Length: 253
Image (cartoon, rainbow, N blue to C red):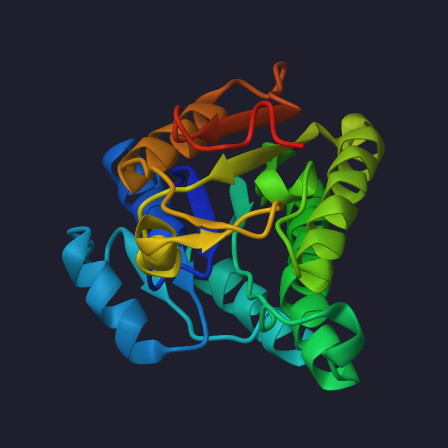
């Protein structure tokens, strides 16, 4: 069932937090949205919370770290909407905050699979669709995080994958030029979500102390993603940092 032409955005990790906020902003900005994540119940609740309907939303549960799941996801998008204009690679996980030498291989690979392989696999399929569709092209936005610039203590897997996303972003931006495919990265610091609740209570700092950190409204992140998504393809925000103004990032060290 192919719908009439309208811009379509896919958000990974859309069931909660930043992904849900981005889906809400994109929907309100006139996009048809596809919400994916591993938890169907959360996706259904997210669609209800953002005011989505079967006409403007599609839910498809998937583990973006699994190639077969990603292929089925994009096949469903092709069948339902007929195109993809924006991919927001948002899905991500962390590992336990323990010394790196105490992490096991499975904990390391769990983060690499979700954060890096997931973005790579989804970008592959999106690029294939964007090159083949008419009008040709589209935009990929990667969630890099402040950790793409500076690590928190005991965060080697998460920090490594987020640094790697910066390289992936630049490679896609370069290789996509000939096909009207733009790619940018949004680096987010301390958005108020379920994941950042511990930061408000106190989190380990580089000097060994525990300090509460300020948070910002996650909807501000959603609006930033929408701003990137709405740009004409002749323009690209290669890198954007949005953060809680008073978080201890600038001047860290």
